[in-house]
Length: 183
Image 1 (cartoon, rainbow, N blue to C red):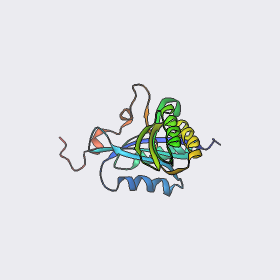
Image 2 (image 1 turned 90 degrees about the vertical axis):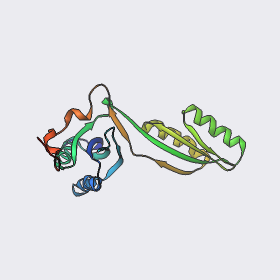
Image 3 (image 1 turned 180 degrees about the vertical axis):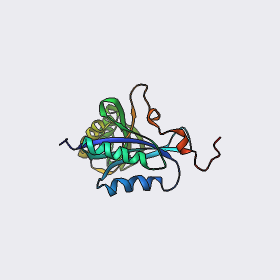
Image 4 (image 1 turned 135 degrees about the horizontal axis):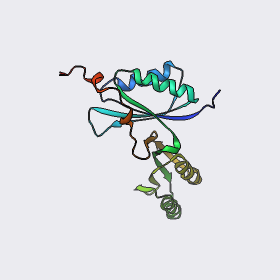
């Protein structure tokens, strides 16, 4: 039996109401918890890209990808491997900074990690950090010394390295001309 580990799936879907619900229900029906989810429109406003992270073994991820491909509003699905993809997340930290010494220390840490300082107030600093999981976890661990008041993170977004794209694995174009005049 394969090892259960984190897998990343990317899907191009129709940009319309209810599609995300269909996709998330598929994972729920199969008994999988979505660990991370990020959705946004692509360069084509009629489609969105969904990036999903799920804990599963290799065989089950292939099965989930095949089930996703069967959903009508799904144009393409790709399993992205860590060694062949670029993965990032955005994390916002609000850190308590009661005095100038603490503010200066937090600013130095932000500079080391190339985080952006978004807001400075008398009692706190808000930082934004874009990076892979190791980098965002490392700054989070260091900032815990200063009392992180609030933290929010996006889901992972990922693109395949090199020239290959998710569009290389699309369904036949004729399948998605529903409701349109096809000659």
